[in-house]
Length: 190
Image (tube, rainbow, N blue to C red):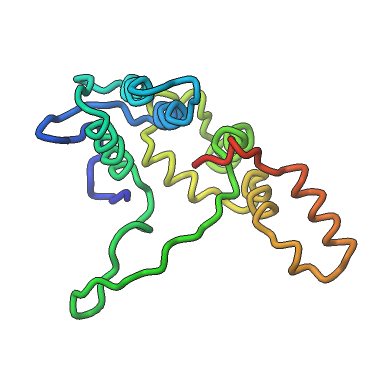
C-alpha cells in the first residue's frame, strides 16, 4: 500500500539479506509475466523474475526461500489493503469473508488501451517512463484512471451482467460487445 509519507521501496530485506531492486512498472509487469511463462521450468522462473527486477545481489537458496522472497516482494508492492486484517473497537481481529473479485482487465491484452488512457488522462507517455516510473506510482495513477477513458469503458462493459438487462435487443448487443472485448484466458492477469 502506498503512503505519501513513505519513501517508495527499492530494496527488501529477507532472511537477513538486503536486496536492492528496480521496481519500475515495466520491470514489475515483465517479472510477473515471466512467472507465468510455461517455457521456464524449475528454478529458471525465480531466476528470471529476480534478473528482470535487477536484484542485487542475486538471491541464492532453496525453492522455498525463492517463493518466500517472491511473496515478500509481492507484499511490498501490493497496492491495496484487501489482504490486511480488520480490527473491532476492542482490538480483536474481525474475520472477513474471502474476496471474490473477478478481474475484468489484463495488463497484457489491454496494454494499448492502458497506454492511451495514461496519455488521455495524465499526458504520460508510458514508453518514455519505462525504467523510471515506480510500480506504486504507476498503480496509483492506474487505479485513478477516469471513467471517460476507453480502457475504463471496456472494463465496465466486461463487468456488466447481461442477466440484469430486461430488453432482449439491448442484452444481445451487450453480449456481442462482451465477446468482442473478452479477455483471453491466459491474458487475464493482474
